[in-house]
Length: 150
Image 1 (spheres, rainbow, N blue to C red):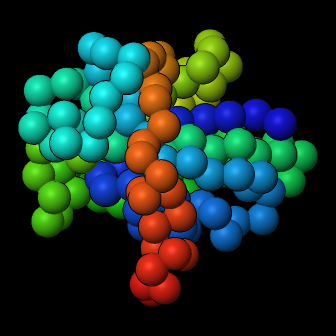
Image 2: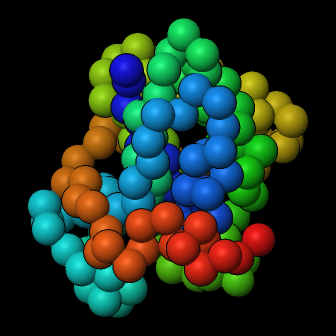
């Protein structure tokens, strides 16, 4: 089992889309990339913690590869928007791939370059080492499934 951390705007919809993919073992939403190891939704919404709303995925590499997950990532949101995913605006809604190791970093750079060609060099997605990930509050977990939205 492997893990990866992806930020692509509000975490509710991507969590739901990934949750239903074959090969995904579990999903969790949280906050990553900021200055502190523990933050709240209210703090992140203020826009000054440096965190991004992030989906943490645990997956079976034999069924769904990290490379395939990154392909889905670039297709699930608009990676050309800086610090937003319409209609949500702010650094907490940025597009970012957080990697755990050099292999993930290498693949993230490769897939980003592939999509950068498709988007005429307009990709705004950051690629960074994972830091200060913390799980979001329980009411955010599986939000769409709980609310029966979609």
